[in-house]
Length: 82
Image 1 (cartoon, rainbow, N blue to C red):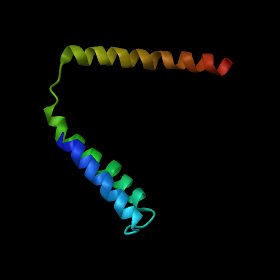
Image 2 (cartoon, one colour; image 1 turned 45 degrees about the horizontal axis):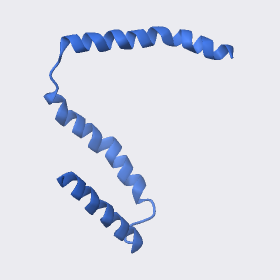
Image 3 (cartoon, helix red, strand yellow; image 1 turned 90 degrees about the vertical axis):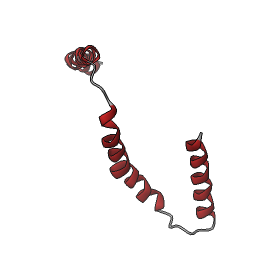
Image 4 (tube, one colour; image 1 turned 180 degrees about the vertical axis):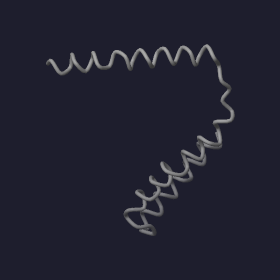
């Protein structure tokens, strides 16, 4: 619930800052770049230690992904024929 409140506060702050023109027009570009290039990788590195390997699940995903990779050239060939 705290995250939803924080999201609402940040949204309201952004609306007010934009309304009173306290931030430049291109602020969203810098914020998006920061989130994508810094925050998301840091969050991933922070949470990766909580993942516990599960061999049956890993085997299932490996087989599924290899199946998709093996059939994609066939699908590409069929698409190119049309």
